[in-house]
Image (cartoon, rainbow, N blue to C red; front, top):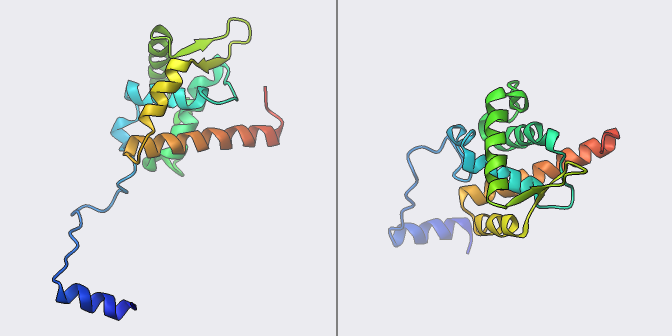
Length: 159
């Protein structure tokens, strides 16, 4: 079936495609209002700490900011540099404290590296199942973190 046949058949069957009125933001993106919410920050920390590259405790605020800056539509290409936001860093510490209190992450006393526990990994896996806006955003944050680590490795700044 070619394009003309497709549209002729759709007209004959009276098939209509209803689109939402506002198409300005992609359906898979999180709004900027969600940016400083503790659950989103906690999920971002889990995304960063669940893999093999464990971030240092003192780096987590900057890394969360960089990952969100690369992921959230309103901050892509922005000059705001939210990685340096005091508000974001305070809320990241609160999210980190929550995750540690609920035993979803652990901080190595010697190396000061943060790791997701098995419970944290399980929570994260359940959140990224499917194609919800949160799942898509978390998968994008994972990629952002990998790119940040790769860029640091290329610059020779890996700890």
